[in-house]
Length: 147
Image 1 (tube, rainbow, N blue to C red):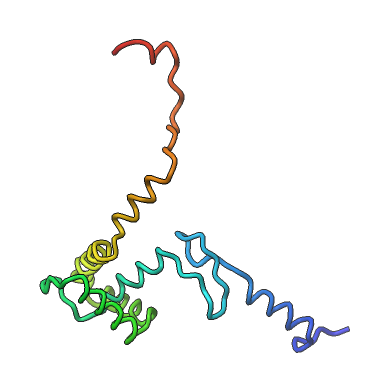
Image 2: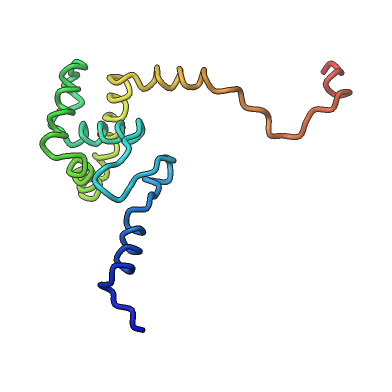
């Protein structure tokens, strides 16, 4: 019996592999299907915002208000798309890495300020239980002695 690659059983096996879920990236534990639908996490959304602000015509010296910054980010994403913004960032880092690093730092700071990332991080940190010490435990006689 020969195995024909066009047979239905072979095609369905490959189709199942192609639509299996896989992690989006190493930092987010979100699963994404290899189709047009993908879960947009908060981390991904802020990354797109930073890349869009980086690719926009807005300059750090302009000191724009938050509403104008949001408008520029939305307009840049509509113009280039999220992948187009990422491509422009990559091109700029390849062509002019000396100026791209401060611009991306500026874009990340502005996005954190405008979209309230600092407040959200503080809120999430307050919800987490405190971390236990990973070192060796204190002995009772050492802890009772004054230093």
